[in-house]
Amino acid sequence: MDMNRHEFELDDLIQRIKDNDNRLVALQVPEGLKMQALEMMDAIEEDTSARIILAADPCYGACDLVHDKMQRMGVELVAHMGHSQMNIDSGMPTEFINVTYDGDPAIDPVLPILSAHREIAQKRLSESLNESEMSDEEAQERFMDAVGRVSPLKGAKLGLVGSIQHLHLIFDYKERLESAGFEVEVPVGGARLSFPGQVLGCNYSGDNDDIGHYLFLGSGDFHPIGLVLHTGKPLAMLDPYTGGAEEMSFQRIEGILRQRFGLIMSCDQAKTFGILIGEKPGQMRRNLALRMKRKLEKHGRKGYLLALEHVGPELIDFYPVDAFVNTACPRIAIDDSVRYAKPLLTPFELEVVLGDKKWETGYKFDEIP
Ligand code: SF4
Image 1 (cartoon, rainbow, N blue to C red):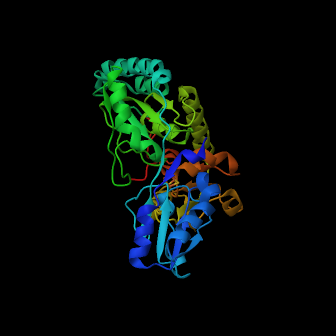
Image 2 (cartoon, helix red, strand yellow):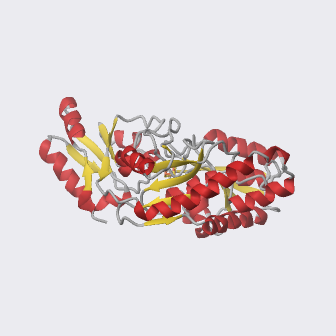
Image 3 (cartoon, rainbow, N blue to C red):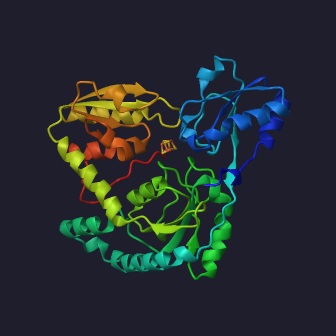
């Protein structure tokens, strides 16, 4: 990955600092760009009379904005880099700084994967017309086959999505893919998302029944895993850093689902649960946590509410409970559960344990709206 090809748009930030005559500014930088943080601090300090404090704790999203703690330090403005604004209020004035990458890979390597996925989508579309007559056994079989939830399809369009640093290319890629014969939609999601085609690890709200398969423009499998778990739809990936194309294999998703089902089964006799509440502004789901506590009580089990800023095995493993339910970042349970000594479930998975939801009719990804 050539980091020098990232563009950091600092001009608006510098102008805002000058206009407001800010003296102390906190800079928040995602993990992948921290190596360049000192360079950015130099650039801002050289152009303004502000002093910059790097908020050096780990930061994985705009859900994790610097909040009132830094106000007590005298910070007047937060500069948050590389993520977009969410539907949350951190209580601090915040400037979001765009980071874009100019990598512009050819679409040729991904076209054969997209053609194969379009065929799967078209087959599902014709099958989904008969869905209302499906028995429970057929639904279960289809669920295993489709890997997760597949809502009845109304179309087989290609959904084009990406991670934030590549979204400036998304409509250009839409045209290229249309020229290659695909019917393409750039989905527009809910209030947690700022841009067409944007996806987060916890939000795929742009998905709709007209989309039968996906192309993800970005690197890594974090977003693709979530999108396939959420939709059950085939997904291809085109990596702007390497130009490489591959697909998110259904075997991989099936493996994750089997692991989730194993954890659910292991909680069958669990009597006591720790219910985790995230303290970060965009992860705090207090009402959901309280609802889980009430549900546990209704089923004769016990839930203890535990609030944390960061969630990690060393912070919770020692509590004398049988299992945990996580209402903070949904990906902690999905991606990190092997690191914990006790089962760590999502709220949907707890409802399956309690018999309030059915596993057989499709996995429900834990989305933050
Ligand atoms: S996936 Fe987790 S870290 Fe990423 S935006 Fe969502 S809550 Fe935040």
